[in-house]
Amino acid sequence: MSLPFPPQIERVLYTEEQIDERITQVAAEITARYRDRNLKLIGVLKGSVFFLTALARRLEIPVKIDYLAISSFSASKTVPGVVRIAKDLDEPIEGEDVLVVEDIVDTGLTLRYLLQTLAGRGPNSLGICTLLDRTSRRLVHVPVEFRCFEIGDHFVVGCGLDYKQLYRNLRYLAVMKLESKG
Ligand code: 5GP
Image (cartoon, rainbow, N blue to C red; front, side):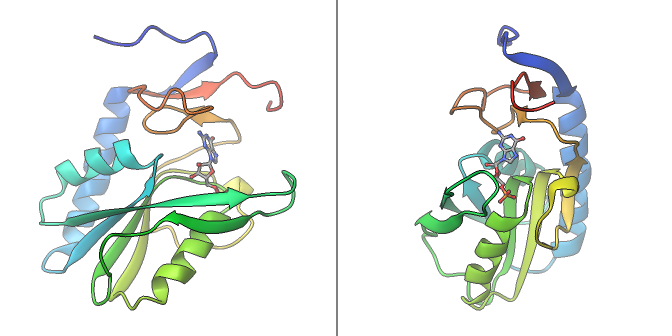
């Protein structure tokens, strides 16, 4: 069963099959890198949940999983917002090999804040894995080690990414029809 194609969707960017194939490849890279280590995946709620689940199921090493949620407040769309942790991790990360799992890295501001915060808790290592990377809009450098797809400047939904909390459950990644974006 599949969802009817929503009218606000402009086009499919990546199909379910393409996404599965790419996640399998990235999972193999992560398995190779973190074999014989203490890997903990940290999912950033809510957008990363679908990706993290698909990724974790393909890893061939034991992993721990924890989640946190971020809130950002911005006075305007051009002024970087203030970011804070709205829901913290359940467990400490001291001495662990942490991989932060994101849905999309855009300006990098959210992740920079997150990495600074997590680094202060003494993990053995701290890496980033993202489903989507939009480097063209980056404002600050963040070291993305694993990415599934590099995308252009269009607003994307599906596979956990939402528009007004809708469309997270689309199995494909799609470009939204938005008035403000070309
Ligand atoms: P950054 O701090 O890197 O600018 O923001 C990353 C966050 O912005 C993502 O976790 C996501 O919530 C949101 N975001 C950025 N681009 C998109 C997009 O194309 N689609 C959706 N649904 N969210 C986006």
